[in-house]
Image 1 (cartoon, one colour):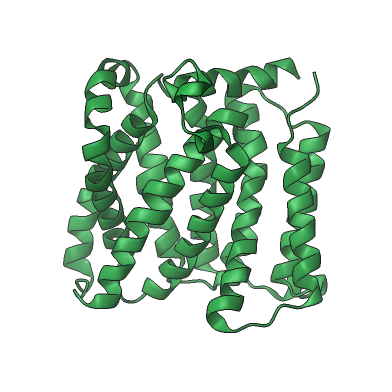
Image 2 (cartoon, helix red, strand yellow):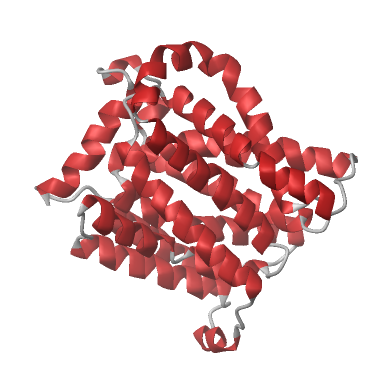
Amino acid sequence: MNRALRHPMSATEQTSGIAARGHQPWIANQPYLLLSITALCWAGNAIVGRLAAGHIPPVTLSFLRWFFAFLLVLPFAWKHLAKDWPAIRGKLGLMIVLSITGIGAFNTLQYWALEHTQALNTLLLQSAAPLLVALWSLVILGIRLTAAQAFGVLLSLFGVLMILLRGDLTTLSNIAFNKGDLIFMVALIIFALYSVLTLKRPAIHGLSFLAFTFGCGAACLIPLEIWELSARPVMKLDVPNLLTLVYVAVFPSTLAYLCFNRGVALIGANRAAPFFHVVPVFGSIMAMIFLGELPQVFHFIGFALVLAGVFVASRKPAT
């Protein structure tokens, strides 16, 4: 129990780069709010990514997303990046792995998957993320899920299924998984690895971490981008595509990753992982707003179960 608590605490100290909490904005020490913002941004990313399928090739969308996000962060991160460079160089291998897994590979595979599968399937698969994080935490950090965390994950998973299957859990047997589902499952395994490895990142400022991983992740995609430009039609420079690039560069990239990394640093990967279940909940709410779907009883029941599960699983264990 105590061992599981030590990892998040040390990561918190490393990520902040500031010893005293009083020197940070109030929101920087609100992990549940930060992770909720992350979930909201990523829910929007799934919808935008699905709409972009067939209009922007997946590697192009991922590369431009991170390239523009890097340009957006760099002016604010430059002085921190210069100061933190010795620490980054000391764990350069790990930083490159984090860039490839959490930035380049995951998002490219996600956009590729959305060309071949429906939103319902990807939302269902995303509910497995907390279990994948728990597995990587056990393998890499030796951290086991507590009974409360395991119960919370299962409870929130049940809530997600309640929403996605419209209150009829028997429809689960009618879902056929395809190529896109398998691609997205690989993407989730990779992102779960990234989530756990962030706890081993060097003691650098959060903006330094974002700038390096964004820039390195985009750079790692250059060979794939060159191949895609020769193999698939080039993206049209029209208003919808440009608005898509602006959205994915600002919200699910810069804002979401800044909030996610800080949230994981504050409470640890296992306690943060249940917030993956909030993503499909927000996605369902967005569908009601933008697609005109009317809320029903199962929406409220499922949402209550998700929130209850997140609350149970993300609570700080008693010492």
